Image (tube, rainbow, N blue to C red; front, top):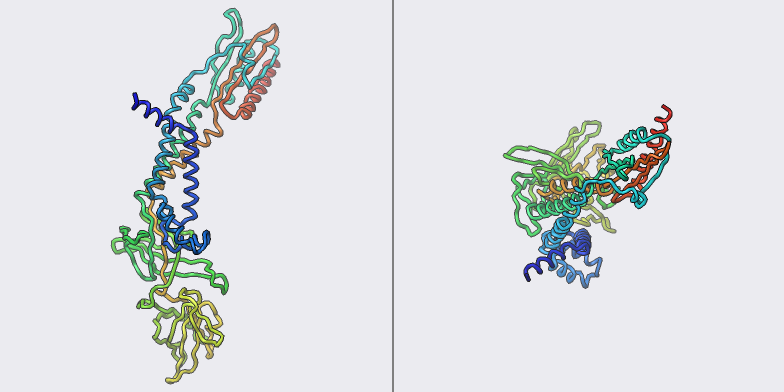
Length: 481
């Protein structure tokens, strides 16, 4: 008996609407926090966020508190999973608890009502027409069939009465719409849990020209992709002459079994997708200075001649076609600037203003030298009328990729489709009932209409008005014939 009481209490607890509202509010609040606090990111990013929110003195403490509560990896935390399970249990038990009552209403056949009860319904109409019951009944049947009703005929009143009652209902299965919604939410939650438990969310830092067959978790653990991905090129553009990035793109190749199977240029909102993995452009940076693969790509145009593109490393020389001089790349700066004494320096390690210092020699003598900047075309012109353009500095940068795999996404999509159907049914469909009483009275027929709907009474009143108007029109036509 005690066990039964405990079960009853637990059952009653999970059938509470207040519990559903509270759990939904907690999930919504947690999702907002999970959006503000960057999930599975480097500590520095969230420490910077907490510095803005609480100040530098409390930023470290706030971060440690958030990390201990699982707010920096919320969707993998035990408590968030527990809330989802409780919410799913609440929806399931609520649905099971109310299902017998709803099923009884849905399966209950519509029946004739007493003549005296026609005035008790919120939706009612009355009409008197000339004619007899034989002409009024076909008109009433026709008027009811137009809105999709399938009326049933029954005798009304006393056995000696000639009264006829027509009754029908439609949309009874719309009462199950709430169950479709509940089922859809559970499907979405299941899809989310599948994505969190069986999916992958990590990153990949890939220098230009490098290939990787693994991505990394935020903790630095390797995750095998089952294929390789290579960064063929990377480029960033800026707003005018400012250092604010306008756009950055990566040219990626997917390699499987030694063959390139896919090439795509990705941007911030244009990811690469392959075998369930999605690679998002999320950042970029500079590779270590000891990268031996780094190349300078120049576009050389001699005076009056055709352009020629060459690649070389710092310290190597190049020839200008048709000229006696040659150039040597002496130095490279990722972000060239000049101090007040016109001395060059790099103001950042990022490729904000890449430039090369070139010495041009002829007959073993330095004829001229200077900086050629990628973003400043005026530095490309040479004294002899030729042009040396810094097209690209390849191998100096890496692309930062966010890597995700979510096997539960199609389950979530299916849940979204079901919830759309459920919401449409819940808001725009209803269980409607109608009764039409035909009472012959001398040379007239009194027609009474009573109707009921479980929701959207105003909309159903419009349907009843159309039935009423159609009935008036049809009977008028019958009288003229």
